[in-house]
Image (cartoon, rainbow, N blue to C red; front, side, top):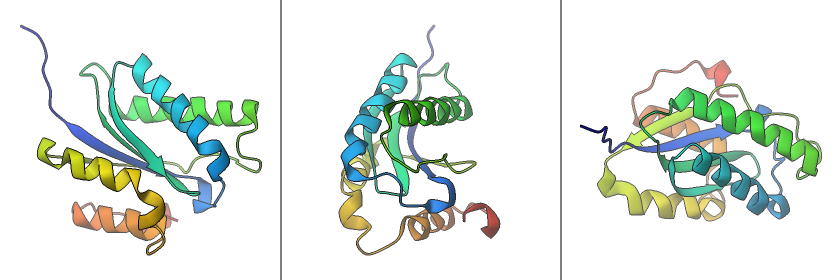
Length: 148
């Protein structure tokens, strides 16, 4: 018998302090680098998107990969890569923590489109407001000081 899973995740994390440090010119390279990490972990990446202050990843994790370990590996590796390649001058680090939300597989196409269109979406709502709305939508209790 093998292991089979069907867990669709949306992972969200921000720059430290939600500072607008992820300028458009470097984002494609950042997303490619993140995609390489996901591929090396045997995760199925559907979409990466974001804006100047946060990232969304839509993925299915390999059953042997722990969510917390994956996010930690992505943050550590991308922080080093950003510094080495000077992708985003002024970037210091990612915020502590992250949000991870699960979806029914039937929501996959809408979720992919939503993440692909982050720039349009955030012309109306800030990344932080969006994040708090996701926490509320999923009934996750949170401390306001940790979403700053």
